[in-house]
Amino acid sequence: MTTSTTTPPDNRLAPGDGLIIGLLMVSAFVVLLNEMLLGVALPSLITDLGITPSTGQWVTTGYLLTLSVLIPATGFIMRRYHLRTIFLGAMALFTAGTAIAAIAPGIEVLLAGRIVQAAGTAVFVPLLMTTTMRLAPAARRGQLMALATAVPAIAPAVGPAVSGLVLSQLSWRWLFILMLPIAVAALALGAVKLRNITTPEPVTLDVLSMVLSAIGFGALVYGLASIGEAASGHAPVPPWIPIAAGLAGVAAFAWRQLVLQRGPGAFLDLRILRTRAFTVPLLVMLVVALNGFGISIVLPLILTSVTGLSTFTLGLFLVPSGAIIAGVSALGGRIYDRYGPRPLAIPGAIIWTATFWLLTRIDEGTSVWTIFVTYLVMCGAQAMMWGPMTTAALGSLRDELFPHGSAAFGTIQQLAGAAGGAVLVSAYTIGANAAHAGVLSTAQSVDAARTAFVTGGIIAFAAILGTLFVRKTPVHHETQVPHTPGTETIQP
Image (tube, rainbow, N blue to C red; front, side, top):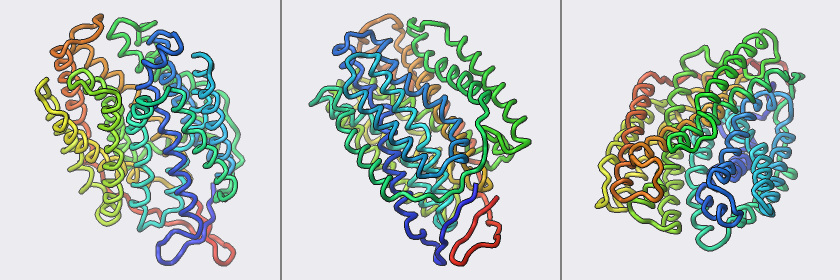
């Protein structure tokens, strides 16, 4: 894929590029906010729609499954279609899904709306990352990518907070009603202002790759997500069955890509994994996303059962984390541009790991403020790794591999999110030593919390080891080809 932009001599964004990146950031934030929005609303859904908890859980699990199936396809989509076409199609799907969910009379229609939402959401993070990498001047790539990568970190983190605040005053339907005008406004602004910056490639969809991707990644996410249910004795099938099917599907998908990448038709080009400069940050991000998503699920349970926070107070507790992530990301981007990823990522990994071990000391006498401060430090330390790892990895790739690298990051984050929820929820359940109990006692809740945080702390050590091997990647200088005055054509 080729990209045409006007390149200013002073490393500033070209006219109009700031609007493109800004619109993609806001839109990505809006759609990603929905990823964890209904977790807090599950009790309300159970009562209002007359469903069981296992059925209600599908409004989140189905959303994640749809993302895991579609995100590997985003590399193909970004090569095949114009930026404007992709944005308008994806935002239209998200808007339609939001409207369906808002008026859903029952769980079946609500689940359908969530799946349509997810179909629109899947492309936004890879699209945002790829577009930012293409448009950002080399000297400012760290700053802009830090802001771009903060979006997928902030949105799922504040989703439960927003949900808690809305549900304290309104019904669950307002989670979608309030989102609808924002989505419509983004769609209208994109239709009026967004311009194309890419030239589509004449690639064709490999149906077998799509099928193998759906089977492999879908079954793997489903199996990982059901581990928590299995730990409490409620899984419909043993988790190892879908996990085994998923691993077989992913292996077949990888083999198919190795065959296709001999030509131009690879669904997900695996040449991105040949260099350590990409794979090491990718593995670090797997660990960060695993613990990050896991904590977003487990922490509300701990705060409710150990400290007795109400839904409204829980929402207030979680809101400041978004501001911390944004602030640290903005500052970290400047440091990255000057010094590279290591001065951010290594201290960030150490501090991040330390916060898990500090929280293993939690008991019924631990104040909410102690947990609050520790959690904010955890979020800030996580932000010190998220942006630098993504920028270092994508910066190591040639221009034509950006869409594939972004798709790989999105896929890994979905798999890690499912695994993180499964691992930490399972640890929480095992720690409570009450798999079939109803409401946990305070002592059981403390034991459950400590087990979950110990598990997270052990996993976090892998991030420290990984960041020691990360290096700042050299900027790939674009090859100059004949072009009209005032433009620059960037080619592989």
